Every structure is written in structure tokens, then in C-alpha cells.
Image (cartoon, rainbow, N blue to C red; front, top):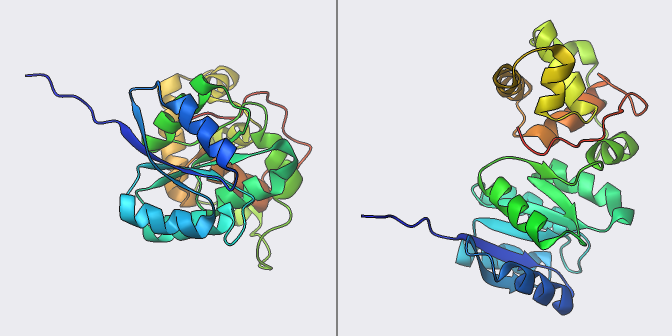
Length: 237
């Protein structure tokens, strides 16, 4: 007897009806995805998410009533199994970083291709972080120095004290934008070893995914805005 995997239940959130319609049309041919609802602002998104229990929320950042950052923070707190994939235009980078801090599992530009959008939804549904290539390091290095609260970041030594020297190096390379293959090549270690190090790093830093680990690297002072140089933005751990 063959069991069929149910489609990923997706809630679309954007204050522009044409954008929601466009996203729905993009996703409709994908048999792995089912659009279960649409919301026009963050407050409505939170209410619908509690009622419909989607697996993934595709969330616009700039919206009236409650913006995508606030909605993401509320969903992360009250529906932790619901993954948020943020969408933004390139001139709203600071809001994307805020969304990652709030708990989004990743972000993409609004002009993302249908194939990349579907792949991103599947990735975040699997519990991994996803970001648009080439953007994560630039976004973090530009905006992470303006934290959402006034608490000064801990010195790098305090954060890295529990990490082994090799884990610190993996973390640093991750934050410069290298994916797992690039880290393995740079350190001359296997891909599986890189993944093991990253799992350990996440646990010791108490971060959920790659995006939050990169933010922590900048906020801790491990690397600075001018350190990064990789073209890849780690798509997944």
C-alpha cells in the first residue's frame, strides 16, 4: 500500500491583492503545496494561522495594522511549528534582518522565480533556513549593528568560549557567506563533518538555524562588516 505525503499547507500574507493572487498562481501547479488561505495584514495573518494551522506562512514585511516582523514574532511565540518565510524588496533590508531576529526561517525577494519559491517553502517546512543567494552577508553586515534593544552585545570571547577552535572557524566561514561545500573545501574536511560542527554550534549558541547563527557572529564581534567575502548565502544547514 502506497502512502501519499500530504501537501504543505501555506498561508499567503500581503497587503496587495494582486501580489497574493500572483503568489497563489505561482504555487498552484506545485503538487507539494496547498494554499489554504490569504491575509492582508499581520493581525489577520496571526488569527488565520491559529484557525487554519498552516505549515508555512509566506509573509510580506511591510504591511498595515501589524507588520510582518510583529506577526512573525507572534507566530514564533504562539505557533512554533508554523514556519515563516519572509518576502521583501531589496530596499527593505533592515526589516528582513528584523524578521530573522523575530523568528523567520528565511527570506526571499518578491521577484523570486516559481521554482525557487516552491523549493524555499519545502526547505523551511523541513526546519532549515533559506535565504536568497548573495544577500545574507550584505544584509547582516549592513544592519545587524543596530540591534532592536539597547543591551550591548557580548564580547566574542564570551560567546565563543564553549566552542572548539574548529567550531569557531566553521562559524566564522558560515558568517562570511560560505555554504557547507565551501566550508568543507576551505578547511579540507568532509561535508558530513561540517554538518556535525554546525549542529554543535547551533546547540552551544542556542540558535535555531543558520540565519540566526550568522546574526550572532556579527553581534558578538566575531566578524565585522568588512570581513565577509563569500558569494553564497548559506541556503541550508
